Image (cartoon, helix red, strand yellow):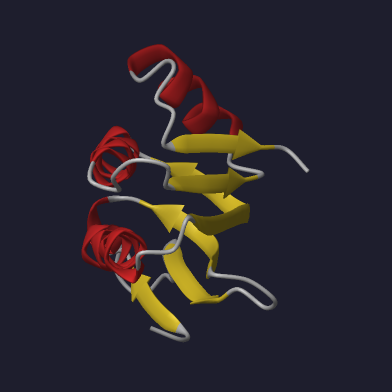
Length: 118
């Protein structure tokens, strides 16, 4: 999945937002940049499925360079966290403020997701 990129279909000729993911240096997980929207959803689902499959106790999503996550993307994150199993969690580092609010509003207390601002 290294360097995977999806570009969203915005207007003719203009580069639109995209999502790029690459392995996280020094840990289990990925570093994402761009936007999680409709066009990037297949890539986002693969990232989350990898988190579920890997079986690690902690999987990190570094999101400091992500500017937007739509509700479907947040829902996919919550669904993946629900499939992790006992004692496992996804640590979401520095997510966009809207994602943090959506998680707190719709999935409060979901122990399998930890939001870290550091």
